[in-house]
Length: 449
Image (cartoon, rainbow, N blue to C red; front, side):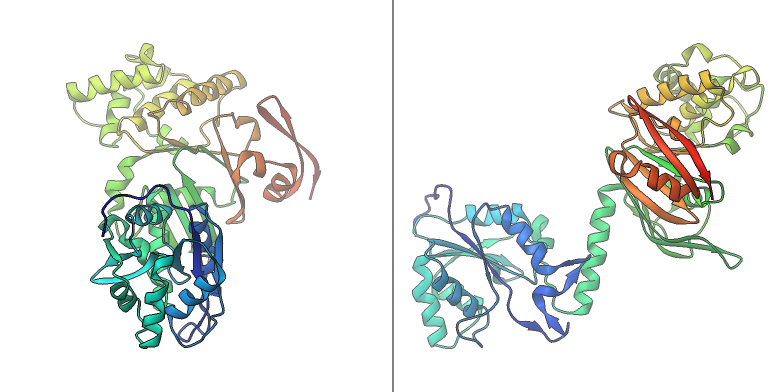
């Protein structure tokens, strides 16, 4: 065989979608994974090739296994190259398909993915392999192994990094494993992920069937009335309250499988409860430095290393002029900034701000919000989750909104689609009219329920 590479290929993607899964009790193509039929998953990957897609759901001759689908595809298209996918392999990625097609050399009759000692899906055959297909059918050797050998196809050893894309779903156990794997992949690509979270205390439901995902590059506002479950949600995220049911991941780590005491150090928390525990004589520089170990009212003097780091953070949060001022003489707005600096001392990936504007006068609040806007725009800054009752505090940096009522996720998503009068009214249990002025918002209650 020649080893010279081929120019960019053109062909047809053929998806073998026929057959009924006895273990699933339904056609393979209709089995649902994460709410989508398997065929839909495979089609999505097939579209990445930019080739026409041919779905084979009925074979010309039944009982030939995958060769029946191959024979049918060859009869339905005159394309020179045919790329075959199976509907029970939903994770075949565009990267894998591209790399597979790049393995085909001039005069090759085909190339098969080769993993764990077997040749199989996905595979690419040229029109020249048609005779080999007929030979295998005539000799009743219907396996893909036989076809790969008979037509002398090239075998491409799939790299370990792409092997998860070859996962098959043939049984209910396969489906459960695939769903678990999908959740973990999604969790590792997110800042936090909550799935079906439930929390009960003394027989009372606090959170119910709660779903929420925060992805990298997003900043969120959490809106809800008093008693809606916001504080309980934050307590679950930071490991201070144990969920009753469901699953929770923070920074790719799953609750129950990771040490939350260590993970908590990567989560910055600014709340009124922390603000009330600060020693009044402690200078701002020491308050920030204490965030390294996440302790309050420390004994002794911080190390010079921590003090140097704290000075850099004070400058970063625009508060270096407050370095020597004790807590007692700081304004409410200054205290909030210092607490943010304290939270940033541990270099968190996630910064949760629990009603940080409470107690601020209108001018101090606006200055604080402008500061948050600048913080959120820093490329090296953490993901922000801002908890509030007031839409007036939503600045442009916040790209996404979560609305909670009675422990349920009423609405969540991009600010443009979620923040509206209807969702606000449902969240707060009153008729509310939302108004926007430039990039800011205001709400007016028009009717109390």
